[in-house]
Image (cartoon, rainbow, N blue to C red; front, side, top):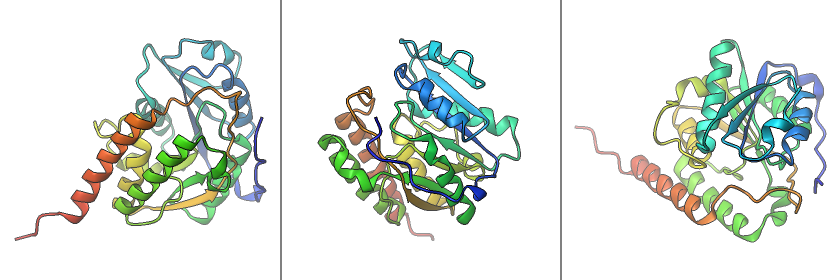
Amino acid sequence: MPLSSPLPVNKEKSNAKFAAIIPAFNEGKTIRELVEGTLNQISRVVVVNDGSTDNTCRQLENLPIEILSHEDNQRKAHALWRGFRLVLESEPDLEGVITLDGDGQHLPEDIPRLVAAYADFPNHLIIGTRTRDWGLFPPVRRWANQLANLGISLAAGCRIPDTQSGFRLYPSSLLRLLQADSNHYNGFVFESEVIIEAVKLGFKVHSIPIAAVYGNELRKSHYRPARDTLEIGKMIVEKIASRFLKPARK
C-alpha cells in the first residue's frame, strides 16, 4: 500500500509524445497493477522481462503493451537500453522516455508531473526525488543513497538530491547522444553515470518530489548495498579524476 499520495499536477501540460520503459525481474506481485496504471497515463508501454523466473510474463497477458524478453538476467542497464533502442528507432520524433521500476515503488499517477516538469524545463533530465519520504527508506539503503548523492553531485558539478531514483524522464536527444553499448553503463551504475554524462554533454538536471512506496508487500530490492555502492563509488572516483586531473594542453 502506498505510503504517500501522488502530488497534484496541471494535466493540460501532459500532451507531449513519450513512451514508458519498465525493466522487470521477478516482479509478478506488482507488475500488472503497475503496467495498468502506466497505461492510464501513457499509450506506449514497453516491459523488458529481464530473465524472470516467476510469473511476471503471465501477469502481463492480454495487456496492450510490448514485451521484450531476456533468457537470463542481464541487469537493469541492459534492460533499459534494449527498451530505449526499440522506442527511439521506431519513433524518430519521440520527445522523451519515462522509466519506472517494476517493483511498484513508483506511482504511475505521478507520470504527468514528470511530463509537466519537462514542459517547463525542456531537454532536461527530469528525476523524481523521494527525499520528502527519506525516513521511510530501509537504513542501509538510505545510507547508500545519500553517499551516492554526495559523490555524484560532486562529479557532476551540481547538486542532485536523489541520484538513485529510477523514476525519470530522459530526453530523446540525450539518449541518442549516449553510447548505448559502452561497457561503462552496467547494472545500477548506469543510472548514476548517466547523470554525470548528461551534464558533461550540456544537459541540465531538474528534480521534482514524488511519492515513495515502501512496505512489506514489495519484494526485496535487487540493489546490493555493498557491491553496487562500491561499483558506483569506483565510477564516481574515475569521473572526478577525469574532471579535475585532465592533462594540460600543450
